[in-house]
Length: 213
Image 1 (cartoon, helix red, strand yellow):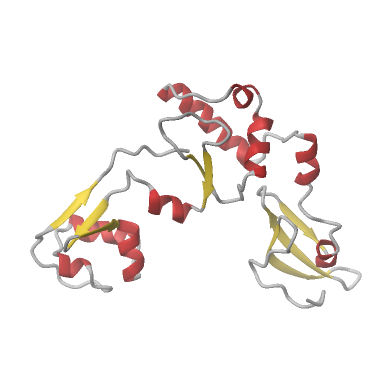
Image 2 (cartoon, rainbow, N blue to C red):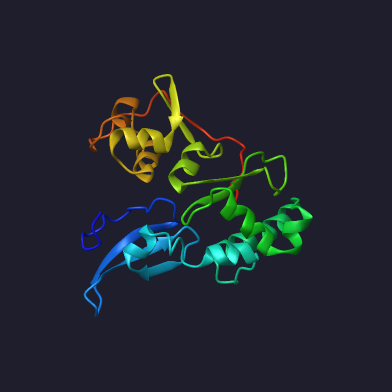
């Protein structure tokens, strides 16, 4: 892709941690510059040619990863603090290496698929926070799979409310509002709002799965 061509928003450079979020334009030397978001959550501004040549592969966090030192402003640091707080309040366990050093936790997350905007949670809720029991996914995927999210059974078929909402092209909250107002199964399954009929045959299920940070 020529350096002066506008890069699509969301374009990810192969072999790097950088995703385009803005085409800034030409710098004082007439060179096209871009703004990217790094997987660690920090922004990077520079020439796309530097990324394509492999000179720049991240915002600089790759070097920090090799050193294993991360500042408190790193987005995963807040996640780390929330996990430690959750462990204290709910009497959960966290492995010693993470409990003693936030750098160990952040290094693990960055090396195992975490990206900016991802949700960090446990795979097995009966186990603590430790390597091998962590997963990272988009918020949309997380809410679709959360077992404590109420599920709607309509005409014998049970799905998460977010799945029903996606099928109809409405928001998850809109689906809950329909149910709470007593809409019938037929009314719940129409893409646009209509005058609600008397509520019958719809069940709302909630599981005991607790939300993780």
